[in-house]
Amino acid sequence: MAERQLGDPHDTQMHSPQSQTKDDMVGYVMALEAALLPCLPARELQAIDRSPHPSHQIDVERHARDFMEAAKKLQLYFISLQREDQPTKEEILQKDIAMMEEEVKTKTDLIKKQERLIQGWRKELKDQLEKHNVELERV
Image (cartoon, rainbow, N blue to C red; front, side, top):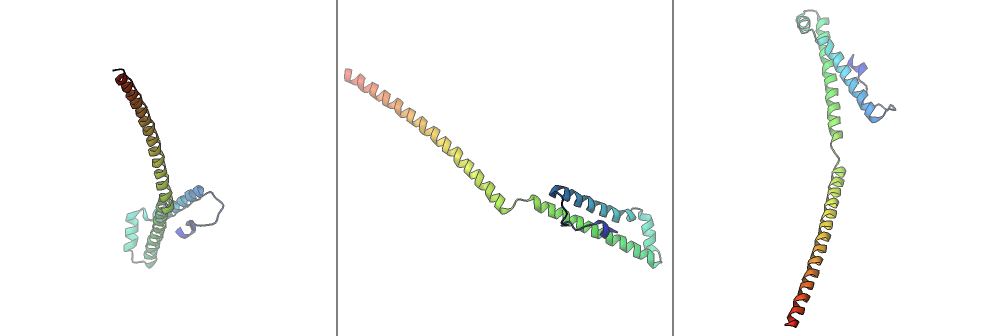
């Protein structure tokens, strides 16, 4: 039952990655639901489980196996999604490099502003020194 509804998540169909992901998710959820539906009337299942008829026991085992198989595939799918969300080492390094380059640019701009400020102070000091020298020469 679940085998028919669960396809290989890596089928080579022509879908966009996002729609393929959505289709995979819907397929896994439908398979899980299909495996769970027979398990919903718990009292009946418990009664069947206690039943002396071997065919009833096989049904319970088959439903449990289908459910576990669908749950495992769904779990593997979620794990693969989680891994896709994590950036690769290369992406992390590129991001770090970009941040460092931005920091260097910011600090370079700050240094240029401070150099201009210092040059302005030097000019003011030279002007004041010249003014004081002129004043001293008069005296």
